[in-house]
Structure formats: structure tokens, C-alpha cells
Length: 259
Image (cartoon, rainbow, N blue to C red; front, side, top):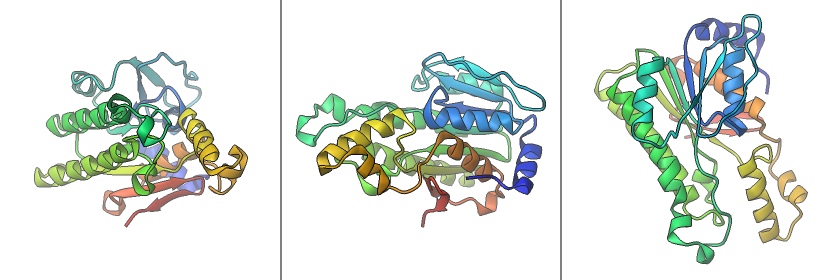
């Protein structure tokens, strides 16, 4: 997916000097998103639990500042929001689920994504509303296509991802009730072998279906890459607030509004 020259110029103009926090930026789609926003001129704060190196800013590109922190810690969101005063917040962080059938899960493994993905989303959206962010701010929660289709080999993962979508909708309602000019939306990426999570899931479901991993992935269409994800979210923050839908499916072909 390529962003048109006109859209790219508009986005760069809009993002220059406007800080974007990317929660879960050390790998996978989060890393691609952080890189895309920096390239478009935004100062980026990359939040992750594990240390990661990012390319240095060149020319007119924005820079990336790494913040080593546990995004699920109740104190982290408020501290980083106060410190960096972001215009955009993108939440991508979450745990990789244990891939096994329901009867082979324990409650601890089944509920892992509720204790990570949902917890992180709750803390960050709560603090964004309490602060609140300045008018015109954009908040994007990256969930999963599993929220729509289910995921029988990943325990409570699909339910947790659906709850992220619900929480984001609740936050938008509260922002409107309070008269806050903040736009919240959810992006649901389809499974992709370009991430560690996607590769693990593809292997498990291929075995379950009696297919090779290549056969399983071929039926999923164009591969979603971190670069495509970054371009798609740049396009999304460039939309007028009135045009932003509550949710989007993200595939290798780009964004599609959800009804």
C-alpha cells in the first residue's frame, strides 16, 4: 500500500512537530508504525518493555525517542502522557497467546491477553480521558481481526481483542459526552507472517487444517507488512475527524471501514 503524494504531503504538514506515542513499538506492526510516523516528520515516542534500536533521524524526518516501560503498569500511561504531551497515541502492545486447543489451556494461559492487551488499553484510554489530550488528538487502538472471526487455538485472545474494540468505543462516547475533541478508533489487522504472532498462529492453524504453512497463508490474500500498517495509519490520522469510522479491518490491501 502506497500513500499518494498529495496525502503524504498533507500528512507530513499535519505531523511536523506533533508528537506521536506508539505503545508497543519495538517489533512487528508497532515498529513499522513508529518508523512511518517518524519518516512523515512526527516526533515519535516508542514505548516498549524491551530495548530496541531505531534509525536516527535524517533530513527532515522526525526522530524516535525510546521509552523503556511496562505499558500495563497503571502509573506508566499518565506519566508518559504528562511528560511528552502527545497529539496522537497508537496502542499496539499485547502478549503473544499460547497456541493450543481449549482443553489444553490453563486459566492462566487462557486469560493472558485479558491481563495484558485489555489491561494496557484500559489504562491508556482512561488516562487519555482524564488528562485529557489536547483538542484534535487522535487515538488508535490496534486490536486484531480475530475479534471478528474468533481464534479457537489462542484461548481468550479473540475475546480480549474484541473487548479492546468495545473499550475504544466507550472512550469515544465519553469524549463526546465531555465535549472533548479527541477521536478514538480501532484497527483490526488480519493475521500476517510478517510478525512473530502471525507466524506462530499460521503454523498452528496449518497443522490443525492439515495444510502446509504456505498453503494456509496463500488463502489469506496479500501479506500485511509493518510498512503497509505504517502507511495505513498515516492515512488514517490524515483523515478529517468527521470521516473516521469507529473501526477498520487492516489487510495487505489497506484499510476497510467496518460497519
